[in-house]
Amino acid sequence: MRSAGYQPAEPLNVWIVTDGRAGIEAQALGLAEAIARRAPISLTTKRVRVRSPYSWLPAGFVPAPRNALTIDSDPIQPPWPDIFIGCGRASIPFAMSVRDWSNGKTFVVQLQDPRVNPREFDVVIPPMHDGLEGQNVLPIVGACNRITAERLEHAVSAYKPANLEDLPSPRFAILIGGKSKRQGCFGGTRALHFRFTCCGSARNGGLADGYIVTPHQPRRAHPVSHMARAALRVLLRRPRRKPLSISSASPTVSLSRLIA
Image (cartoon, rainbow, N blue to C red; front, side, top):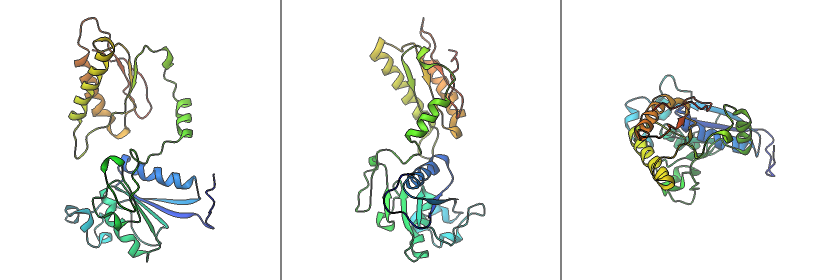
């Protein structure tokens, strides 16, 4: 463990508070793990949901949020943490209140754009493309994540479905997401059509023969994989074109033949 100079006598008590969705929780875990590389921490994961009718309210206007939790939520109660890391809409009422509950002893970090005044938190870390500004706003490129050089090295050594150098070029690596509350899969699939068409046109006047390696998100792999296959079948229905190969396994990437 590398030292940043100051080391607390006891591990820092860190909470990450989210609604438990994989992509949201991974961002909070990424920041907590980055802190752990600098100082010892004791990490607690809290998954919360606000019940109706409170869930119908804007996240910044939920009264007495501890009394609005669903029965399957983790409790939000003392002892309060040294650092509170919230991510996602469900965490906002608690992030806005925990400083009062702890008499100002908890340092509150809110990831993403909370869509409330950033001054409600100690630090807000949104993606740069959100355009959020403020004295306590620290925009970053993309989002916090758990990827490190060590994790990448381990993943490369563990990934042995095929010798990639033996596969024909060009080779594309694509992370395919899925449906969200604000965007469906179909828009992403249309974008996939456009990107492959442009890529092929720029190279050979059409889609080039090759391979696609797609590491799917585990919770979204199934339906999106089928949609990607259907989209590529349409694109590849051209005379004397060999089909691309696309992976379908999750979370471990593998290669399989795409039958046109």
